[in-house]
Image 1 (cartoon, helix red, strand yellow):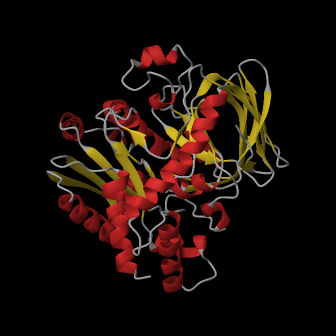
Image 2 (tube, one colour):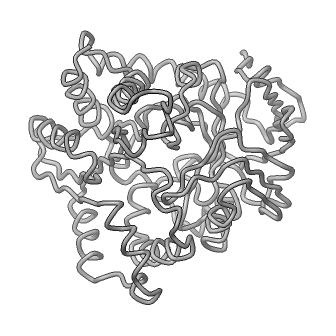
Length: 414
């Protein structure tokens, strides 16, 4: 398979299927400098699709690292008005967003997690309207991955020479996103979305009140779901009526938990890369929806910075189900990147919920959603806890028990 043909199709996937760019629409592309080759391809494809304007917001993790190491706390929390106005311009012009993720695990290992948290929280507080726009599906948005040497070195394929390893990482990304230059990528993803919707349709039919998760690693967790919750799988429809795929790849069916109805312990099964740090071998214990105890073998401070991001970051906003016997899981590749690893495993998100996961949620006042159990936070961080022996039992509204997962996989039927 030609690398450049595959890269070209990945860019096409991001534009036509991910964001589903409409003719005359403004496109905002967020990319770090490591991903410039894919970024340039996406810009080209977006204009071919009829984009009115493509704006590229560049970032550089090496530059950001220097900022965190050298700026004082007050300076880090400054959010220039031009940055706020830029974000308002995007929203006012009904832009769609394409985000390229290309992590650099361990780059921030010598950076104080509190400094990263201060800067991130300040930006979210000033530009919360932008998060409302994207997480509320007011417009289309998508995330796609790109390989880089730092991501690969000593992580994904540590036994390979660097050149071979970077090629293997690209191949793993292409495989995970179903890239095949010999096929029509839109048709491939239409079929994939259709297959995923079978699970969400079935889960919605059962209308569970709670889900109980248990495995041999120590997970013993009960999650209550909000009334009128909606399971979503595959693509979604934005408020402007455009169908899009937020995550490339995606294998999940997910919904909204009730903010105060999570009880028990959950043990993570994959490392979590967060703000340049790799959190490993961690667990959390919940009471009345809130994290009351936690630990991690590595980067416990970074885990604490997630939980303490704001007053609601210690509650969950998403529960997602994925069979252990799935393409990304079966590849046996640990990506050290949430976009890919979350699609190989059942996962939970600390923080903000998605309005789309409750009936009438899109466009509804946040205050009204909170009354129904919606968790409103400035952050949303997924972590993985699925395993080959995970059992899930759903309890229906009338108290009936239904086996949803057995030995890590969906077994639920009509």
